[in-house]
Image 1 (cartoon, rainbow, N blue to C red):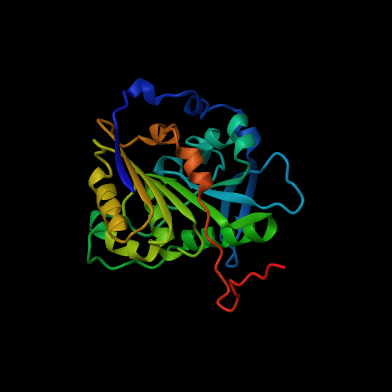
Image 2 (cartoon, rainbow, N blue to C red):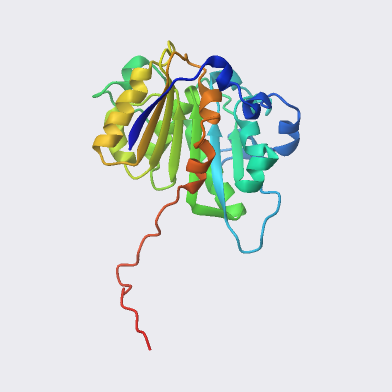
Length: 274
């Protein structure tokens, strides 16, 4: 567990991986789908699948939640930030996975977002309809693809970073690791997610979601004994996600996370050697 302060210049943050973010190849790599939940609510999503799926093998699932600028139902805009990191052939060959970019049609992934909702003592709002649809989508993906339930990851930026915290607090049994980028959460809620692994990113000079939010989340998780790293980009504002995506251990950390299988309490540790 450590706190890292990264002194990146703006130009150093613009690396080749993120430079591809607007390229047309992203749309070609991610297949287009629309999920309809049990209440007939629909959610557009794009999915990157492993280039080759080996029989009997299971793969990680990465759920990526976009920010407010990518809301809508065109099933395109949600790929603007972060998609090329996973579809880059070098990375997709090294880390084969199902990577899903849903698109939020409502104002927020979560319920109402305001400063008060992130303060200790504030009541926890009910799960939003959008989040309920999203979790049904996760269940659907697991049921219909060779997905490793011990390697389900969630990444989110800004509005999606807030939803990342919210969902892992509500569903800590589902998610193995979380990467909230410039997000916020009531730190009291994180006791429910202490078994989830976290890598948190924030820009020091963020004037939309203050870096104080991530610092408090880190301190809360650290005090709970959770596995958590926090990276704060010195002098950087809200849009620190390109720097986060290009952080040297971003992908290697994410794809190394796994849940330990739950041991059968009736299973003996005794091994008989002939």
